[in-house]
Image 1 (tube, helix red, strand yellow):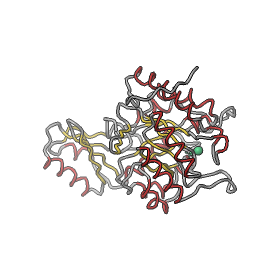
Image 2 (cartoon, rainbow, N blue to C red):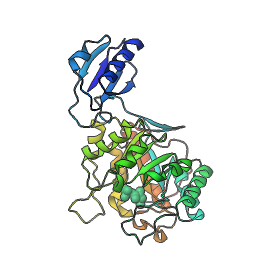
Image 3 (cartoon, rainbow, N blue to C red):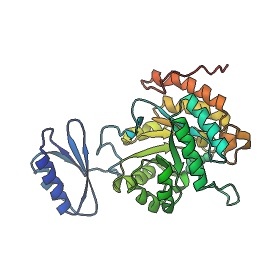
Image 4 (cartoon, rainbow, N blue to C red):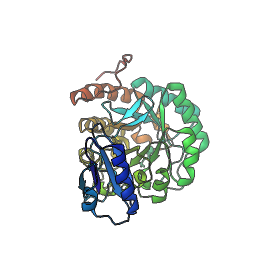
Length: 348
Ligand code: PEP
Ligand code: MN
């Protein structure tokens, strides 16, 4: 249920409505926009909407039929902007996160960070805990990897996103990164999601390999209902009958989610396509479809990468993609890394 307060509702009236809802055993999430306050009401208690609609200051009470409440636009019509200092995800600017799949060595992380910064990325990506399909594959460097990533992010003036695979890693990863990444395989790790609801850093939640959009939004709801409002959704491709690409990159999910939810949506064309020659076309399409950002794997020497080398771009491919995005973004009213950049000298 959502309680929409009148435009001129006073703080006393809002507090009285909240107190009444809590008396009924409900949890109340307040969202104050420019003109009105909206209360998202969730929980297992029983409350009669007709009674609430009679309270002073209440404009209307809406029943929400979608199973997700806090993630939906009915509760919060205005877009959520996740802010990390001067980086705003979900605003006008398309934010690009880029870097290697995994941290491998100091030199590798630094070279990749330098390359993506030069091209206009705002956030360094890189995993220190890797969810690999095989237990015999490289599993990530753990804390030393996080340290390398943080040092490179600091050196090059980038924010840092890194994957958390288990609730027990939250405290450690929070010391190093600015955004937690929840991987596709953990989209329904509800213990992890609940714990991230209490974290004080943004969470990028990838869509599960076989998850519907509704299931994905329900997972976001776990984090939001714990009190963490800074959730970023990430489309990374889903498993279908098609085998020509690693996954089927669901571009239609971008406008669908933008319509259903106020949360920012980032696209991951690297895992979506799984081949570096397909990453740029998918990235261009994702921005054109309205993505608020991209997360892209870039490696200074992808042919020797310890994970996901085949889908990791060479720095010069990434440079060129960024130059193309600087043409596409303004065409749909968005900006992208507008600060002046040295000419890259790529040719068609
Ligand atoms: C990754 O970002 O390297 C990763 C493992 O992604 P996903 O969870 O989408 O497979
Ligand atoms: Mn990867």
